[in-house]
Image (tube, rainbow, N blue to C red; front, top):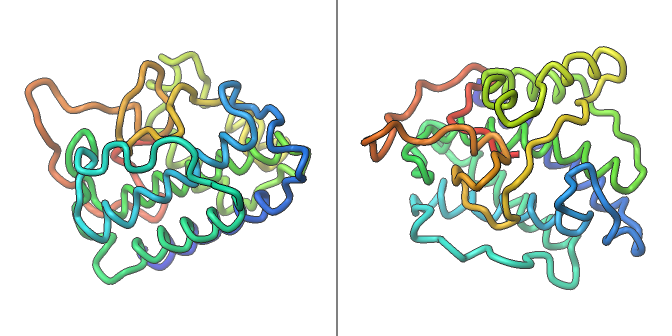
Length: 234
């Protein structure tokens, strides 16, 4: 399970990186299916998500300790290089011995590293499709990543429906085009902390909050290869 999950994570990061390299100089301000973000803002969001991973997973730090660390623009003058550094460090943190079995302290409490990795893998896949659409590149995704993401997201069908999105679109559009459909989760800032909830659910990490009166959650059992995320942050 560990190897398969890390393979999917690496595959998702590679695919997003390929699309980042496809961005022409005049496309960084282009709109994307994420109505609140243009191309640069979308890449900035996904890159910032990777920056949270090493300190949370490898260093055992908390969201509160890191609050504000990855605010604003994290791409600088060379977005491709910024993505490469952030994604490489993120994958290395998850691939380290014991990382997937370790509890990670997110904004709502504790979750296993494997669940956090599963969540961010699906998140990266969804945003790869968004980015491809934004720049007019091929939006076809590998079947392995589509299946992984659908299984990761479907446990949150009720949350998606409540936010006005229909998970069934993933199924119907995948059947026709072998890639995720256009249903989206929106509302998070590019620098939103893992597991944090904003006014509108955003990624697989915004659909679940601590139970009333509970300060944290017990780590979940290590999920199946497809994963049962503690959160979904898209």
